[in-house]
Length: 401
Ligand SMILES: Nc1nc2c(ncn2[C@@H]2O[C@H](COP(=O)(O)OP(=O)(O)OP(=O)(O)O)[C@@H](O)[C@H]2O)c(=O)[nH]1
Ligand SMILES: [Mg+2]
Image (tube, rainbow, N blue to C red; front, top):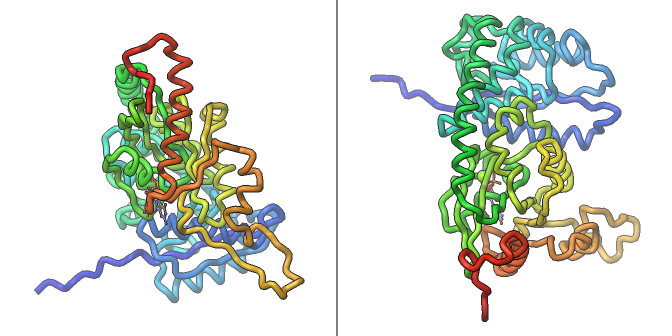
């Protein structure tokens, strides 16, 4: 009889640093996110190592002493993968592989790997493949050896599985081929977008896992894959939504993340065109996440990068059902009130209040406040529609109660 094989999560160790601009708390937040990424890619985090330092060691990134500690742990616990939160130079990558004798990947690599795993359509696959080759090119010198690459698992999916003997030239050829392929698809996509007529276009944007697809599903009755993992959605879905009697197009697209690899932003250009060409953005935020303000900043930064930063935008604070805050006892006169103590009402008095009607607080799961959401989106879309088609009587008839 065949031995029953356990398909478990790959045992993984995380490595992060504490620096002058990245204090202990920040470092922990980053590692929390890295752990979620690792889990999404199929890894189980067994231990985290952090080191205080101001300059990374050019040879191994972390210091020699720390490296010995990690090595001992990797040996004793049969660790398959070590994930660094920061990008490693090709030399550091190579040295660390030699010392630790296991797979060494960094954040960028991990994100690319998740994208490779998640890419459904040939379009998304081509985009991810291009990004992976671009990541690979400067690192070819430090590549894993033949056997190691055949092991598979995290960080090993996508190109490279079959093309172990790649050299720079082959990779460069591959990159230009993929670029050509993408240009062809991009043209088709542009035509498709053009064919959608002149309906107002609204795009859901936001950090990964904030509930964009869930919201898309509840307001368009569609069935977009939503899951509590990062980057559940890679391909853009566009649905026609009608509120009252005003039709418009709503698109759900790839989520953003801090330090989204530039290779990915570039290769997902066309996917992101949906955002660039939208008339209105719905910036969805997971208000129950402790770092939601950082998330907003990362999303805004990426929007600026893809030149979508100056569009009319509504802020949709989602997951209000899951929002929690700490409380201060009435007789506690020492503890100072900080953001962790804010109630939703306190938050509404901060910068959020200044966003005015364009800030909405909802729960997509519990369908809380969706009526108000519809009403506000309706108003905003109507505004754009009327400006665009002052005389148009076909697409839009004035709604009367
Ligand atoms: N508690 C709570 N959970 C929610 C809410 N909306 C979505 N979720 C959950 O959040 C997780 C992520 O939801 P998705 O809709 O996949 O998020 P997304 O923004 O599309 O994520 P990506 O496609 O990965 O960028 C899922 O487990 C949802 O069930 C909400 O209002 N409240
Ligand atoms: Mg999604």
